[in-house]
Image (cartoon, rainbow, N blue to C red):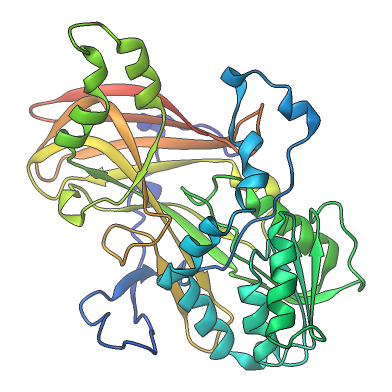
Length: 395
């Protein structure tokens, strides 16, 4: 993990990091006019979206014995993907699914006669896309009971001779082949890294991917901005200060420490956006997903700041045309939405003033699918001076 940096030690070159913008024209063959006024603006470090469900299995007996207060996402993660509802939500996320489809259909030369591994295949939609453009064989690995449905779907669509569905964890199964040419997966979680599906993809890459093979998507970037959100913070956080006349501030402490996943109106954005981290999935190691990154957010108007907002982009850089999508508040909404991290203080900021600091992201030690997030930030403005460290936990 990168060494931790305080606000005063941030290098000027890091603070002024402003990614070059590239316009990504979203290609929806069924309704080309729908996106006329909603083109997504992406950075050169990320460009498309990823596919289906994550790897999952039944909880262990040890997890079942945990007391209720100790339950975390690990207790519910594996089985949550067994129900069709979560797959319906992802399949209906047109930005996500159509992007994967376009990457495969418009770059069929990458898949023709190649052996493909679909990590966390879910219903098998990505495997079906690959088979349709001429993949030699596709191994669709899914750990939830949705694997049975995927097998039926493969058979119903006439691809049983091309797609092999394997039920199990990537870390525990064996493939019938020693190497694959392509690994494709929709591994991204909220805040990009929640649920830690990325490590499963990296495990598969290290074990099976042929030298110079492809990982799709191959780039992912995390961003930070700040918003005005007085009404919602009052409703969700400050509510606990006095509930029917009773002090419930102990719950407020929990509420403000838990990031909120929601859609942010772009009109709420007060500052620029800051690139925090870019990951090259084809080269990175598992430990690289834990990091400390500096940021400098410059106010674009006089306003108040009530929260930081994180979002991500993903890219498929090996396509004949740069392809990708953003989950940012200025782009078409996805099922990932954005991640809102409320500040203890209301920051009164004037145009041109800056909030500087650093964000540290690590896997939770008790449950590797949870995230621990620490933000150190400071503002030395005309009307407001703040220096604070806040800890958040995504669970």
